[in-house]
Each structure stands twice: as C-alpha cells, then as structure tokens.
Length: 452
Image (cartoon, rainbow, N blue to C red; front, side, top):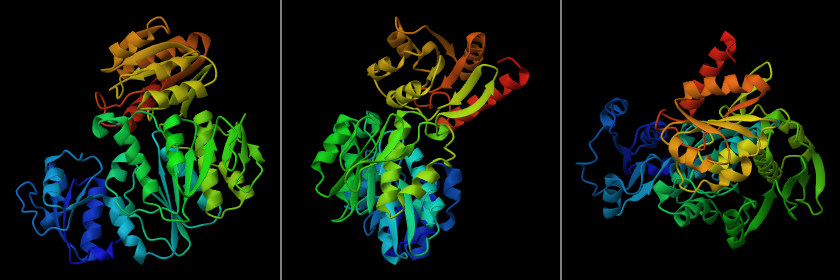
C-alpha cells in the first residue's frame, strides 16, 4: 500500500468506494487521517466499517479535502458541496502525488490519450520489467495507484491516467508524461472538446523543468498541445518522420532521439502490435523507455515478447477460414476505425451499443474491407442510417444473434469476425470487459459446436 503520510491528522471525506475509493480509505487510515466515507451502494459502504458516514448530511466545515472516485462528475451534489466549503476535490492520483516524498527514489511515467492508453502503459511496464528495472503498473488500467506496493530505489511507476483522473489531480509531476492522441470522447462528462483537451493537458501543466513530454503528433488536437509546451517535447508518429522523435514508417521503428533517425527494427509482424495505431503506441513506449535510461537494443528485443491486452484486437479463436477478433475496448468511432484498418482481408463487423458521439464520419474511410455490418444495441438505427449506401448492414439486436450471423456469413468465403463496437457497452453490458467476455463465450460455443 502507498501511504500519504502528510495527510496524518487531517479530516478527509471519501465518496465512492469502488477500487480507488476503498484504496484511498485504507491509505488515509494508515497515514493517521480521520476518514469519513460514503457510497450510495450499501454493500460497498459496509466495507469501510466505522468510517461510514452519510456525507450528504455531514458538516463539511473543518474538513481538509473530499476524495472522490473518477466516475464522480464535478456536478455531483457532494462535489458542489465540497466546493462551497472550499475543500480540495481530489482523487487517488493526487494522494499518490503527495506520498511520493516518502517513497524510495523513483521515476514516474504518466500516460493519457483517447485511445491506446492501456496498451501503451502495459507495453512500457513490460519493457521496463524485461530490461531489469523494478516496475509497478496502475491507475485507469484497473489497479488503484494506492494499492501498489512501494518500489525499491530505482523503481519506475507507470500510470494510465484518464481525463477523469487528471481532473482530480493537482501535483502529479511525472518525469515522463505521454499524450498519445485526442479525439472526441466523454463529452457528456466534460461538456465540450475544449474542456476534454484541457483535462488531457493537465499532465503537462503539472510537470517541472527538466521533465519530458512525449506527444503523438498524428492528430490536430495533440499537435496543438505539443506546440504550447515549453520543456522538452519528443514527437512520436506512425504516419510521418518526425525530427528528434520516434516514428514508424512501413513497419520499421526509427529512433531520432540522439539526432539523425536510426532504424531500430521491423515491428510489422509483432501480432500484439498489429495496426498503425499500435505502431504509435510502440513508438511512445519506446521513447519513454529510452528516456528512462534503457538501452535501444534491449527495448526492441522486449517489444517482440509483449503479450498484449484482452479486448484489444485480441484473436480469440480461429476455425477453418474464419478468425474471431475481440476488440470490445473500441468504445468510440476513432478506435473502431483503427481496428478496421488494422485487419487484413474481409471483415464481418459487429458494431453498436451506446453511442458517445453524434459525428460518425471517422468510420467512413475505414469501411473498404467490411463485407457486412451486424448491428446491436441502442445505436443500431443511427449506425444503420450512417452505413446506408456504404456497407450492407442489419440490426440483430443482441450480440448473440449478431455473432451467429456473422460466423455463418464469414464461413462461406472466409475472413474475420470482428467485434469493434464503436460504442460504449452500458445499454446491454456492465462494461466493455463484460461485453468482450460474452463475445468470447459465444464464439467458444460456435467453434465447439462446429456452427462456425
């Protein structure tokens, strides 16, 4: 457990007792803070024992801060109540930032972006570990940063940071901060693109002189962020050569960090880094590893051993001439377009769920290999209207029905059945993991029964 000892003796309220909130309670109690905790879920509330208190009725006078889970918006009544009481409104990342002074000497890499955060974070942690450095991976990837064990001296913390988490952080100055890309996402929470981009920019605003920013420069919004930064900015790209940066051209990784770009090696055949978007992830992770002092050759050798993450262009089965790919993490149109571009051959595309965006034009350029779209969920009518005249499509309602139909059609001529929904999952599933797991089970049944 990471303990923020400077919170000793302070009075802290915690709202939201899922993973990060519960970890915050335990960390604060270990530091000697007086904690009041609440959750609207009675089962979660029971987990904090005597610390449970109804924060809606509590007097916030005399409190030092309100710690909230990332899912709590700034418009929530308790967030507004905290602001009225002039309390710091923070999350677990800020508690980690305040705990750093007591940790053994270490470095921190913080990774944000609309797409690719988890893959890049996991890849970088893999590279660091294979190269022999102590490493801990946490944050939005699923492990609260406060649940991590302190690393020995020389360790490296790798954090995936969502825009929600960045909004609740005030002093997390990362030795290396990475912005992969920016496209419309979570606008229902942030209100508009300007606020969303501002949340992404926070990682760099918190950095100190001498710390490094690594920026993916393949989109306009990220390039604009890079142009405003005063410190060292390392550009990365999967589309063009970038002087002084790291880039991939025709599958070859180039390192220009020391001057002239040097070809490092071919990553095109690394199955877990398939697709141009994953080349950008690899370039960013490679650049970060170099900034952490790792050797070029050792980093490249470790790239080929990366196992990948579930629900991200994950090949889950193959039968006859049909391959099944689970890309349930593609919860927006930009991510789905990247998946469609990464797959070779004919695609039988399962899409739909809860749309995050109104503009679907980003999908248009990626539809060339799609033989048919099998639509599910609430967004099916909107997707059908967009796809009309572009791609044959049909509303199947459920993932079960769509997968069965796609499997039958693909078996006739061969190709890939791809779940890459371009939508959130919450209309039919609890999260993208549950949707991906359901797809895996359905495919396993089809393959076992020979129906595919």
